[in-house]
Length: 60
Image 1 (cartoon, helix red, strand yellow):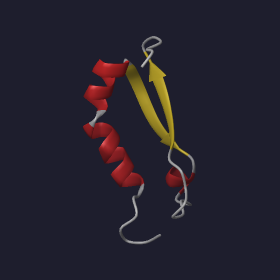
Image 2 (cartoon, rainbow, N blue to C red):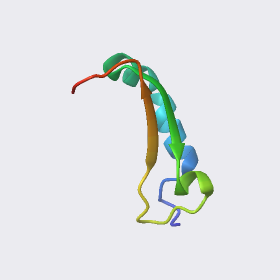
Image 3 (cartoon, one colour):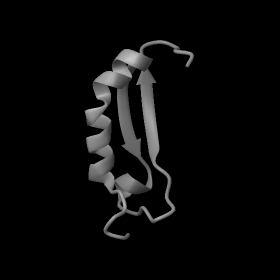
C-alpha cells in the first residue's frame, strides 16, 4: 500500500470520530469493520467493509 493510502487505524478513527453523529442521525447502535482491512490484506483498490447494527429502521 502507498503511504498516503488509508489503513485500518484511519478507518477506525473516522468511525469513532463520527460515532455520536451516526447514532443521533441514523440510530446506529454498533458499527464494525471487517474484510481485507481487518486482515491486513487491503490493496489500493480495496473497498471498506462495514457492518452496522441500528436501533430501528431509518429511511434516509
